[in-house]
Structure formats: structure tokens, C-alpha cells
Image 1: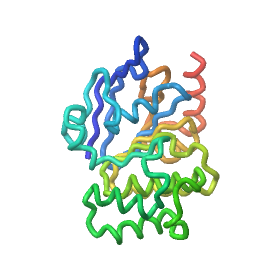
Image 2: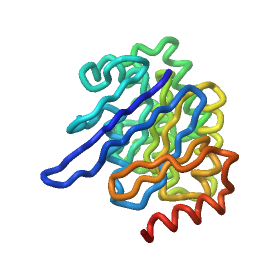
Image 3: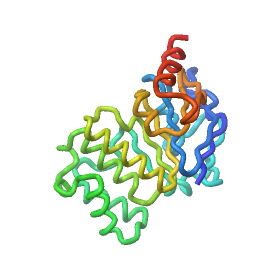
Image 4: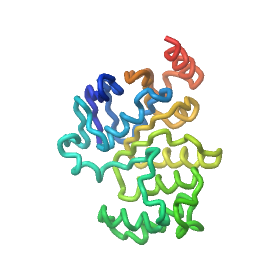
Length: 233
């Protein structure tokens, strides 16, 4: 499934947070968007996730108008953002059961137990989320994002605040979902990990999005130097 954004803009008052962002992502691609804090990355992800309406521009997901008909495309999206898209007082099992029922997931019990095993949370399946560490919570959010077999994954700073083991888990999961044909958009300020998982690379600075390279055209070191050069302009 293809996601296409054309001249997406988001203004807050007199300030433009996202400025005419145009790009696309196809099945099996991982679009990595690098940018510092405050660059507009999270705002862009929320627009792509239909959680925030743009001031102007177009967004198509699977050929559908995702701005006008956002409720029709949400089942195609799996989203991980900084906000906990789950109930803290509920356990991972209870959360996944609840959201699975909302999405009409078939063989729900099997899907929930399988996902919890895949993200390494079988032992904590019935503990409340509010006692979880950042890394454990991130695993739950990834399971929730994958629960309904979405075609497009939107991951905002998926490596932030994680220890080495949790980062390796996220990297492996992204690679697996790419191989399964998902279209994936990642925002991060970590050029090393973003390069490792990405197939196309963008910089987002002061709300402006720019495609800079594809995997194989540059090394990780070159990409880092390009990024640092952009930040000093």
C-alpha cells in the first residue's frame, strides 16, 4: 500500500511547523526522516497518522483521501508515537484484547498471545502498563501497532530512551516488517540507527523536508556529515 503526501503544511498561529512536505512511501520501503528536536517530525507523523489535520496539502493512503476520509484509512496504519496509545491501568493482554475487538481482528486470542511472545512480554502479560519501563512500554506500543496487520507503519523516534537490548529488538522488528512488505516511515535524530534500518533518507529542519539519498548511495559516515552540515547552515 502506498502513502503519498503532497505539500503538507501545518501552522500554529503565525508559525509554520511543517512546510510543504512532499514525499511517498511504497510497500517494502523504510523512509527515515532525520531531524533535531523541534524540527516538526512529530507533527508530520501525527498528520500522516490522521491524528492531526494539516492546514493545507494532500494525503493519500492506498489511493484514498486520508484527510477527508480519515476513518476509512486508519485500519491500514500502525502508529508508535511518544504518547501512550493504550490504557495505563490495563495490562498488555487487556489492551491488545480491547483494541483487537475494536479492529475486528480475527483469531484474536491467538494474535494477542503470539504478539506478546514476539515482543518478549509473556511474563508481564497481565501486569498493568503503568509499572513498565520505557523499553517495555515501547514493546507494548509496537505490539499494538502491529495488532491489526496494518500496511503502513509510522514510528516517531522509536529508539529514544531505550537501552541497547530494546534498540536491537526495534531494529529487528523493523527489518522483519519491511521484509513482509510494509511501508514504514521513521523519524529519528539517531543517524546511525536510522541509516541501518532505512532505504531512503530525508532531512527535516525548521519544518522543511528534503530527500537527500537512498541506501547504497551514501555511507553512514557521509550521511552524518551531510546532516551536521545542514544543521550548521
